[in-house]
Image (tube, rainbow over the protein chains, first blue to last red):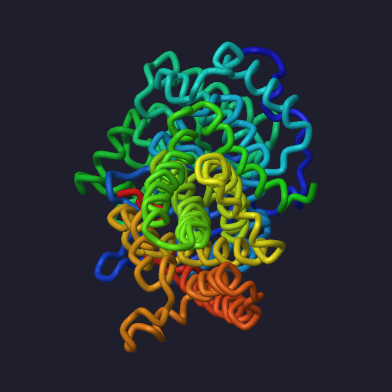
Length: 265
Length: 265
């Protein structure tokens, strides 16, 4: 890993360090007959990375969409950086960001233009300097003036990461950030995320199917199934509780109802 | 620049960058207005040879074509700019940024004005060069005609965007067709009195009909049509209020249904 980077450079925390960056209470989302998220509660502290683990349809993406204000909850509350998302979501959104391989950036404009667009939307000061810092840190300098649509999957992921860091967010929501990446590119992305969190104290909520990624990045893991949190703990705690060697086995135990966790003392 | 203005500029910059890189898009802006002007210009020339007063015949037809293009281009400018976001699957990023929905609408309106100038200015110049028709001879009141038709285009587009939020990409054809559908009752080329009696109230409920009655009053009688202008302004205010209400309700409904996650599908 490199020395001190500029990923989180210039960031000034604007909230009490002891306050949870994300606090979710009894969050529920129902679509007619379908209960997508069922009364979940959790908190993410500054500097913590919390993983959302679960199979397809477990409610991971819905939870992230609720946190971002893309969805209105059926019940429950969300506070991000002290702001009630039901009343004051734009104040929180200015200090959050989001990345997902399933939400594209405009393909026909250049990487630099894309970053300028989001720099303006997030009111980033000294925008050109910030774009230069991110490009240097994420090895994007040579692609800055190429249309985003002409990049490889790995390069696009780095651009999406640069977009998600453009405003030096206090809260970062990531939906499968390394999906479709080769192991080398995925490892680099994880390294950048670790470094950004360490340097900035950002809170990260990560939805992923990649167990190795969750084990490496996350301090806490929420196991989701059918919209409910069925278990939670640090990766080590979960491994010990299920008597398994890796999180993939824990995931399969929960997904297939193969084995119950040992009672917590 | 305030943060709000910067966010509006950010979204406009995204579209301007797109046009800078896409000459077919730029060409398309002027293509239809110029084509319409050619067709109706020659039609007017033919009719003028059969009728007594060539100048008035040409004025009524070409003035109608040019002013109706203002409404059409203004409506398409908003609706197609929104569709560009949908086509590039970028709406997810836009809606989780601090950009307020009304700032998005302001940016789309800004783009509509730019597209209108690029699209209609060549047609106005062509009408003067080929058919010696000077639209500006209508006098300073032309500013009010333009303004009313632009505003009508915006509220129609806001309704179209609301329908796209409600019905997804299935409603996108309305971006091109909806205002064409109103042409027969907008009294563009003939007075409202020509319409069947039961259709006339529908026509008079549209600001465009009053603008075109006003245009004819100037060209045929040389009188300034203040009652028609007052009616157009009042109707625009009422329709715009209704369109804002519909858009706001559909935006909230889309957040409740989760439609913002897959509005392009």
